[in-house]
Structure formats: structure tokens, C-alpha cells
Image 1 (cartoon, rainbow over the protein chains, first blue to last red):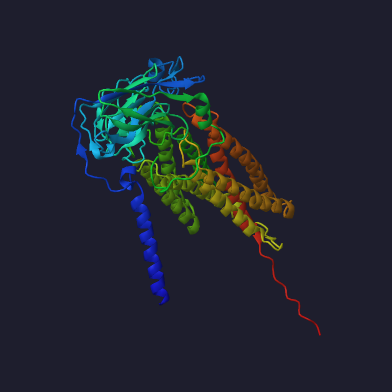
Image 2: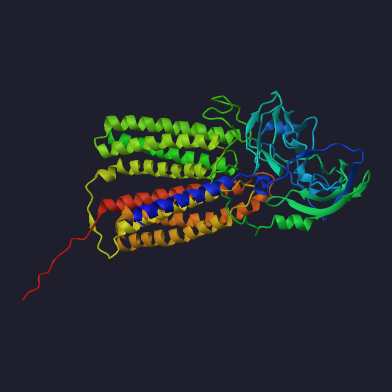
Length: 288
Length: 303
């Protein structure tokens, strides 16, 4: 074979290889898996159950005070702002995101093969120069209404992995922004480029079986179809948060109990000064 | 009139140095996307400068001033500079500053992709060295008929200095890539940290060897030893600032927001790097000016 043909062949192989890598970039975990069966809309049977539980926290943590002086409006409205990563009261942790990761319904269907309708919007407010709520859940393609209740300008910037990234300014008095996320992703970090201490997390799931633990650490997930499920509790901290997993079985009209426990030791190790990210994520043309 | 041109290039160099600091402050405060539009900021020429918009828009204002000064310099050079190659270098500087402005806009519109952000940071250093070079070429000393000195050692000092300048530039690219690879609340990629440390070792060896060669071989030539001593001091300072940047940056993911000393230490590391690069360029240019290749002599064998 002539040298030119060999070079052309190598070049084509290289291009095909790069195209293969490129075509795999940005794909959601759903798209990378095996081909799915067609989704069946879920019809309520009246036998749905509940999952409840408590998120405990072992150890003591101190919330850090935030310096809001860069924006006098923030300094005046919320002079005692603190971080919300480890909100612990009487050994109970708030702002943990609890969700069903996967499972099998009692009729044998896989949870991922069933679609669930949603109603209404979810609201994320900027109030006192912090996001309210700090952690929230939403279904794919369900509307998130973003409002600005502060007499100052904010800038909302979600940084997802599997959904399109966007960055938008919202002045005081501007109408709510309405956005959706098309792919499931747990969790999408949200920042404000104007006020870098502002953080929120949005859990995006195909189904409505998720909850955020309250100030007393409790959570409740209602109207869960009977079946066996993998339940996950996510708590922020470290490179991408900490997750704990429990298997639960929900019986017809029953209540399944699931308690989780996080600790200060786990949180500290996630923030270890020796921890470095393992590798630079490709492609380098992606935003952050 | 040539002194006036030189003073103007000094003014532009100073303004560019301020711009480098302003740009570094934007990155350290994570203010790069404080406004999602460009070239206006939230649709205005002069928006309310609160929060991180103060750093981002402030950076844009200084950049505009530097752009206008570069245009003015080109007009000045066109009218007052007889050497065509100097006028052309001024035109190159203008092209670079325009490209830099466009890159800055691209970083905002594409939401800070690593390749574009690193290119923006690197081109900033190149622009700084271009205006520093213009300052050297328009200086009265450069125009003098200086005594040339034979560069007679086996390894010509001019080429050693050139290699040092290239090594410093490559290290700047690594540093820019590392700096933009993760925001303040994320840890830096291990591989890039190690590459940048390796670059620091290479710079220390090559630039250190070049500087010590200058000081040893041409101890009486203050035209060379002056910038050589400054470069040595900046190299030592930069290594310390690099260590301090690494330590403060390791701690920042645990902080609630970008805080000092991380902000000022990382900004100082960036600007000291720029000064070290600029000083190496000055030293290299001066070396090429006053050092000449040794004259070859043939000794005929006598029968």
C-alpha cells in the first residue's frame, strides 16, 4: 500500500476515533446505558405507600459566617448570613436530598421504564442574598420559577453536567425566570456570579419520589408505588457530595422507614487538604 | 521627540501591568461571568458596580483604556518613529490587544471554556511582553552605539537566555491552564498541578543557569547584570508565591466564598510571573544587542 494511502487511512481512523469520543461526550447516564423499553405512564392504584425517615448527623460542625459587604444591600438585609452546607440541630441534618435511585414496582416493571406526570411549578427564590430553598427537587421538564426578592441584582448560573448550562442576570423587580432541565441529574449546582457565596442544588429526576430533609432531619416521600427500591440520601460537601444508600420495600398502603446517618468525620475527610481531583475532565472546551 | 515616544510606551506598559492585576482579580474572585453579556455589562456601559460586577466591569474599563492607549501609541509611532520595524511591532501590539478583547468576549459568551480562558490569560502575558519590548526598543540606551562583547563560551548566552524565555512562556501557559481548570470551590486537577511544579523546576534550572552565566561572564556590564539581578529576585519570589498559592488554593474549597489571603496571593503569583517573563525578555533583547558571536580564526598549519 502506498505511503499516501496509509497516511489517509490513519487520518480517517483518527477522525473516526475522535468522532467516537466526541459523540460520547455530554451524553447523560440514561443515554449511555442499554436501550430502554418504551416508558409506560403510571396509573394510580390507590395502594401507594410512603417512605419516611430521619437524617442524623454525628459530630459537631460550625457554620461559617459569610462576608456580604461586597454588596451593601446584602449586608443590610442579611448581616448574619452563614453557610448552609451543614445545618445540624439536635443531631439532625437539614438539606439532605433523599431520592429513589432505581427499583422494581410490585407489578415487575422497572422504575426507569415508567413515566410519572407532574403538576405545578417549583420555585427557587433569591431572598436575603441566598437561595431559598438551598436544596430542591424537580422532575425532568418540570418548570422551575426563579424569583428575585432582593432589592439588588442577582445572576443565576446552574452548572450541570448533563443539561445545558446557562447564565442569566435577574435585576430587582424583573419577572420570574422559567427554566426546565431535560435530563435527570443529581444534583445540579447553582451559583450566583455576582455573589459568590450563594449556592443551591437542584436534583432533577424523571419521577417525583424525592424529598429534602427539614430542619428536624425528617423527610417524607409520598405516593410511592409498592415495590423494592434503592433509596439514596445525598449531602453536599467534598468534590460532588456524599451519598448513602439503603434498600427499602414499600408495601401496598404501607410506610417504609429509612434512616440515614452522616458524620463530621466524613465531612472533614471530604474537605481534606490532601484531596485532589483525580483528573482533568475532557473535553477542555466545556464550561464550568 | 523619541524620549516622548519612550515615555508613552512606559505609560502603556504601566497601564498593561494594572490590567494584568485587574484580570487576575476577576479570576480569583470568580467574577468572570458576573455579567453574561459583552461588550456591554447588563446592557449598560456603566452598570452599578456591586458584588463581583465591580471586578468584572472594572477589568473591562481598564482594558478599554489600554486599547485606546495602544491606538494612540500607534498614531504616535506612525508620526514620530523612523524605524519601520518598530512601527510594525506597534501594529502587532494593536492586533494582539484587539484579539485579546475578542477572546475576552468569547470567554463570556461561551461561559469560560478552559481552552479559551487559558488562551485569554496567555495572550495577556504576550501583549505585556510586546509593549515591554517596545519600551526597550524606544529607549535612549537602545539607540546608542553600544560596545559589543564577544559571547565566547561554548554555550552562547544569547541562546541560553532565549531558551529561558521560551521555558518561562511555556510555564505561563501551564499556569494559566491550571488556574482556569477549576473554580475556587473545587480542587485543582492533580496532573496539572504536577505539570506546573515540573515547569517550575525547569524554569528554575534554565533561567537560573542563564542568570548566573550573565553575572559570572559579564560582571562589569550593568546593562546586562541589572535586569539579571532583578530576574533572579523575581524568580525566587515567584517560587515562594507559587508555594503560597498552592497552599491557599488547597484550603479555598472549604471557604464560604473567595477569601484573602487566597485572592491576593494568587493575584501576586500571576503578576510576579508576568514581571519575571518581562524581565527575561528585556535581558534577552539586551543580550542580543550587545553580545556577538565569537570571530572564528583559522590557524594555518605551518610546514
